[in-house]
Length: 72
Image 1: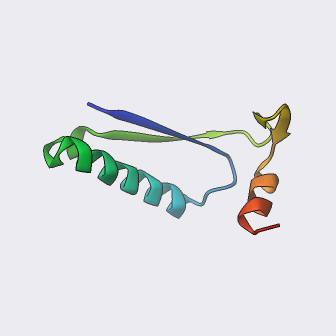
Image 2: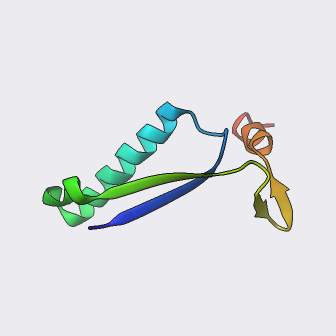
């Protein structure tokens, strides 16, 4: 039974985006392992509190990521 964990910063992804990520990651895993594994393929979307994720020694917030998404 495969388990895939997706981590993201809280407040960046909408519920619809998280559901889409879960569905597409499940589809990707099933394309590798076979359709019979779909019902036992687990995908967990874990959210980290904004500011508790660091890159390059700097805390990253949801606002920082949203600016990048917007091309700013």
